[in-house]
Image (cartoon, rainbow, N blue to C red; front, side, top):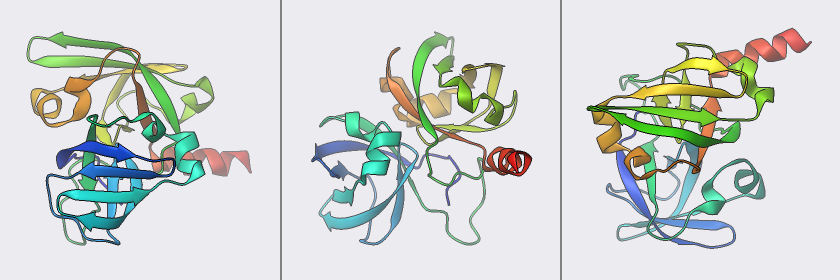
Length: 188
């Protein structure tokens, strides 16, 4: 489990057909869970500052990890340890879909992020609820069927990969787990 509070930026060293190798700013151990752009992955190998993770076909189909290239910045968050503070919201690292950045505008020190996504997920998003965008815990507003906006404060801008993003980039979206369970209950 994660909180959506990014702990560091990594850089892609290499990506194979089903592997991702990143340079990590912190020490990792094989077997650890690590959220990479909000995707829960298991560290398979560590050599120096490089960590290797395996990517399943399901992960490649549902996330933006298959589009990463060497040098790309990725958001990293180690798994939450018992007793640690919950600073964001509950994030499982189970990405629901990929969205597309349609607006990324600086407004003074702040930024506004606009994301479009498949409207079939619209009922999982509430104005002033929670959403993880590339693993970043954000609060959506201007929610409509298939799009939302989020305000990005300076700290988040400066400590995540958002400052390296552009309009048209794909981002991983994980909607609030409570909304998923409510939808499932309603469908029964």
